[in-house]
Image (cartoon, rainbow, N blue to C red; front, side, top):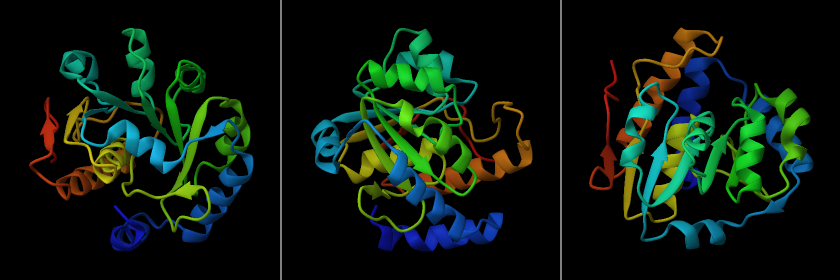
Length: 222
């Protein structure tokens, strides 16, 4: 998805959560300045994804039971990376706002995963602390207007951004595993805010071409 298509959703999200666009953009500039590693180009991602089956692994509590449904190019949503590594699987791409176990994200990067680090208004401290730790292939993204080497392919949470990335770069099929829009993992956060974010993830995924999406597991939204 191009930014011109995404921006209407973005404005609704800002209004719904009371987020400040200025903070999102400050975080994106910070990420652009601090991100190290081998910057991956959109063309490299397209070569990896176009015409292929892509599985996006969400961080729902159902992920361990659905790992058998993984096929093709594997995109992990942040903390799903830890579960996948425990099962001997290295994702091809990791979508993260640095909220997961950073040592596992770095390990996946060392093993060859492209780590796509997302900047938003609430993760500036984590960007300062961890963005320079990734020495492999990396890319920066923003939920605001893209610039330079900081991109925006659509999506809000790590999971639905993975699905939007797959669609943007021409996946033939997008399989979703580990998605449960009703039961977020307990991570010491405000659970109600997390549920609202998952509601947005459900809405956004429903906007993708239905003939491309295969959804396993419970994943129904309340």
